[in-house]
Length: 218
DNA sequence: CGAATGATACCCT
DNA sequence: GGGTATCATTCGG
Image (cartoon, rainbow, N blue to C red):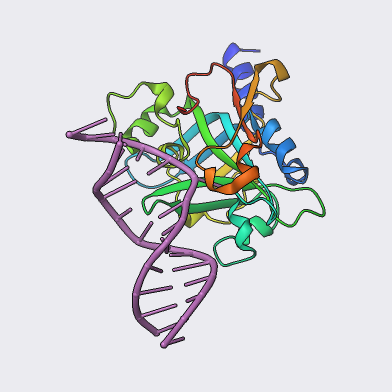
């Protein structure tokens, strides 16, 4: 078999969507298992149309109403409804009046709400599209999607994709990627920007790939 | 280090 | 209904 065909088969496997059951586990377990997976974006219109793929290198877990750092602490509202809805869907919101953030809804049976914030990816494919969307010609590749709002800008994700199903190959989805990464590669620490949340702020629910240059600053 | 910038949620009339 | 405090960030000075 030709080398290109083998590579194409491998790439197709890496782009295979994660199925619903992947997200029907505890939010923290899903967050852990998302490291090394791919975020895939297929756009049809505009100068940056095409496929963009990034490898997840940093995430944060957010729980139900009991988690004072989580938006779901407000209960079921128009804004937070996706966090209470079917797992495997997106929760996209605006923060600080100008930035979007992308989460995937994940929780086990019995939990009221939960989602994993995707904080950083490293470019895998379509890096030129990312750079175009970011409009920052001098940034190194590794920093193009290093931070939750940068990730959304680089991947052309906005609130139109709120509640979008991420388990089908349609526009935006999460894919198998490189599979599960080893425990030894993972570092953990408190979530960013949630100092207001009392005891909950200290929980080590931020997870990242140790030493990866695309992890956002702290 | 702090300004930018607007949706949301909540409290009060 | 209307006022306002708050914010899961980023970039430039």
